[in-house]
Length: 69
Image (cartoon, rainbow, N blue to C red; front, side, top):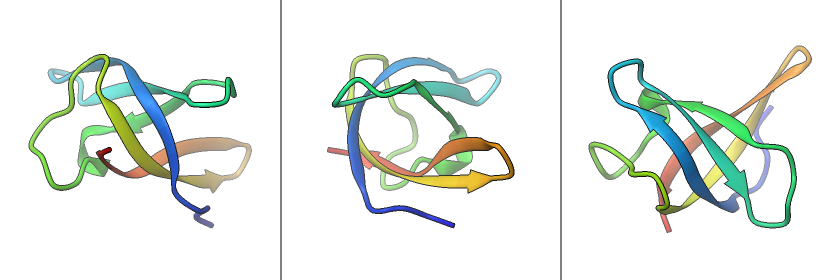
């Protein structure tokens, strides 16, 4: 199930592994994302502001539809 769009900042991204983390605006827990979730650009950079949705699967959450803010 996906949520409404949220805003945050990329705090880490490893293009070799295709994994990264977003720090949500508002101080919630960091959210992981995969490179396949990035939209409208080829790559995101650390410190970049992004908009994303949350997808919940079992007890885990991840960012999906990650796009530049």
